[in-house]
Structure formats: C-alpha cells, structure tokens
Length: 486
Image (cartoon, rainbow, N blue to C red; front, side, top):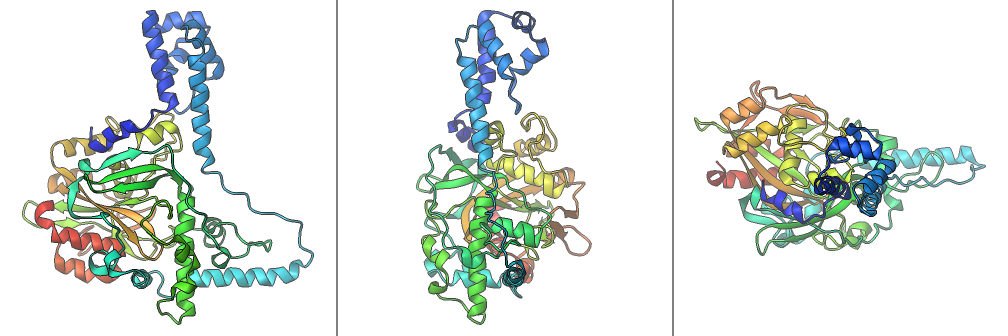
C-alpha cells in the first residue's frame, strides 16, 4: 500500500462501508450464519450476504430494519443506512446542473434573434481567435505576473513551495482529507464572458455555453478532488475536499475567455489589469481559498531502454473532441484528479494519486472505456486488469513514479500536478503491447512510424512550439534531472 493510500485513511470511512462492517461484526458476535440470519429476517441468504459487502447500491431500508432487529443493533444499522443515503445525495447534488433562467416569451422575438446571433458569433470568435490554440496566449498571460512567480523558462506560474527543486517519489507525497472547506468568493462579474441564450437571456455559466455552442464530444460533469491546502515544509503535503468538474471548468474558461477578449481589444498585445476584472478579483492565484482549484495529474511517460535509447510518449489533443486544449501536444497520460464515480465508496476508494494515474494509463494508452464507476462494486485494483499488472511491475521496481509538485497554466489559471513515470523497456512493451494510436481525446504523436519520441534535449527543443506550457516545463526539468529519473 502506497503512502497516499495510507494518508487516505485519514478520510472518514463512508457510511456504506461502516454499515457493511457493522452487519458482519454483529453477525459474528451473535454467532449466526448467513442462513440463520436469513431464516430469522425473512430474506434470502443472498440478500443477507449482499448487505455485508461494500457496494454502490445500498441494501433496502426494509432489509436493514430486519437485520437491525435480528442482530440486536438497537437502530444502529438503520442510522448508518440513513447516513449513507445522505452522503450519496450530498455528493450527487454537487453535479446538479444549475437551472437555466426562464421568463415569459419575449414579444419582440425577431428583434432578439439578431441580438442573440451577434452575441453568440462574437463569443465564438473570441474563443476561437487565431493564435489562441497555441501557447502564445499562455506565454503572454504569464507576463502579467512577476518573474518570482514563474517557473523555469517562464512558461507556467508556481507559488512558494509548489514546484520542487528535484522530484520526490510518488509514495512520499502525503494526501490529507478535509471535511470542512470554505467556499471561494463567487466569480464576478461574468456577463462580459458569456453569450446570450437562444431565448435572449445571458448564459449563467460557461460550461452550459460550451455545451450548446461548441458541442465537444467530451464534456461531462464529474466529481473532482478540490485542493484546499498545500504544504512543503515537511515534504509535499496536499489537502483535498470535493468540487465538480464544471465548477472548476467555469472558472478557468471564464478567466481565459476574458484574457482572449482583452488581448484582441489591445490589438494582440498583453492587456492591462484594468481589462481583466475576473483575474484581478481572484488576486493571488496560489491561494486555494481565493481560487477554486482541482489540480489534474500530468504524467510524462518514459520508456527506459537498456541500450540507452530512452523514449517518451506525446499526445495531441483533438479540438473537436475535447472542450479545451485542442491542437496542442501534451504529455501522456493526463487527466483530472477525480474519483471514478460520485458514490461515497468510490470517493474514498479512489483518493490516491497512483490509482488515478493507473486509470488514465488504462484509458489513454490501452483505449479501455473510461472507468466511470458504472459497475455495482468499487474498482478492485488488486485483481482487475490492467491494474493488477501495473501493481506487479511497480512492486518489481520496473515501473517507478516521481512527483515534481504543482504549477498553474497562466491563461486559465488551472492548477496541475507534474509527475513522471519511468518504465523499463520490457515492462513498457508488455503492459502497452496494445497501445492505441488514437483515443477519445486525440492521437499519439510519434516519429519514423513509432508511437514515441526520443527522450533527448534536441527532440524536446524541436517539439517546443507544439507543446503546452506545462508539458514543456515538465519535459525540460525531467531532462535536467535525467540522471536521477533514469
């Protein structure tokens, strides 16, 4: 068990897990078999057995009441089930999409239609303005901040203690859980970054506008882990709560849209702070109490060759499939730090950097369906493939992982974790024998018919214009530290 999984023990056990444990405990204490409990409760043995397993489908209230009575729990099982149901509903409510504002139908509908069309066209023009899909605007946005707040090369932002001088092994990063998390100040004003709906009202959030007007193939609201604290004085320690993908997406995309609009208005020059009220209102971009953060995990994957021919994998995101980042190259895999589903058992079970990285490898490298928690049971990382094989090679020392800390992409103020995975060539070749050249988010970029690139300073610099700011930063510092990593 890795350290981040041990740290997850500080996270309160979900009530569904405690309910299953309590049933097993009381049954054992009473010295009863499943068949005996089934006979006394009036339910089948299968139902009694299911109540003792951790699943996403809670046992029915009637079954729990019967078990409570048979096992002499004095209402404890009934209370645990009610608590589990409340936990489910509380987390699911985070993903409830705000209801679009409605009002009586406008009498001057024809007049509104032209205004709506112009508003939506202008919004799309700003979002897709020439140059915005490369790294140009990210580099310009970085200039708004002092040099002391920029990472190596000036491509990304990094706060005190955020980016480590040298990488630490993934196990050394401690994850803590916080049940009490204050809300960040609301992002306002936002009217200048949102278009009109077809009814003539202003959109209430950016994600709804993207869904309706951009229509990317992949845009789904999911529960995410929210960064609420970072400490590096005693090793890298990250504290998390929960948020939703749309909540952070709305913040990042609104801030980016505002910059794009101001950049166009300034004749493609760096705009002044007066033209950026949203960014100005956020202030310190490294304060998770001011800026809502859900730092995804970006992993540079290096195939370590026994003959010294080390290679890395690069991914080009497809702008027609993803809601942001289309047209640029990035390290692979990369994804949000989030549980596989909104269910409390998954939120608890998946609170691990390693498990998140494994799921991304499975999806992006092997083309497996997204592990979205649709199965009735939590993911069994110890026995399910490909996770079992990932674990095996990691235990054998052929699959090593490092963590560099966190950075922020300047354009959208999106926080992200930078990690490196180094696999010995035989482990890479066995695990990724069925490596897919294209996945749901884009395609792999390779050279000379291969699906990887040489891990060399020359290759990194040649690829530089195509790379995202965080990918370039990660590749350069990994190349700097290659003796340690390899």
